[in-house]
Image (cartoon, rainbow, N blue to C red; front, side):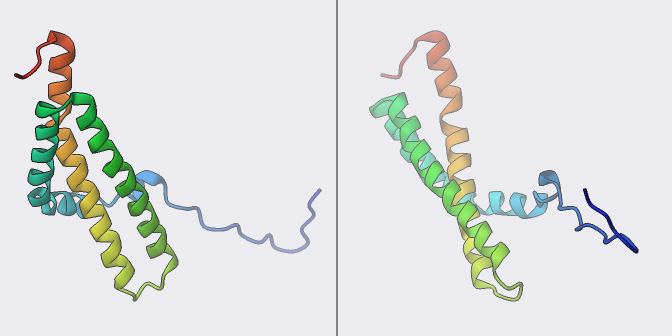
Length: 126
């Protein structure tokens, strides 16, 4: 049981929802800036896909994606816990997000279409 005598104390301000924290312009700019890094990584993935195996290419894409996602999350937490006037954590977070976008775009542009074609047709490159 809770009894309040006098004026009730207001609760904390509600947090932003996850869709309000996305920052579309920031992510779009970083995705655009990551395009020069996307080409070489997608070339590596395509080379592994064609020369070795499709599963190997997915593993080779998945491991850096996982590491970069964890690093991006750690950098976002670092920015949230640092003083607002510090630029170092913000730059490191932007760099981690840039690398994550490069890895995501390279994977998306290289592997899904060929995976679907191989699965549906059974055709493999020579």
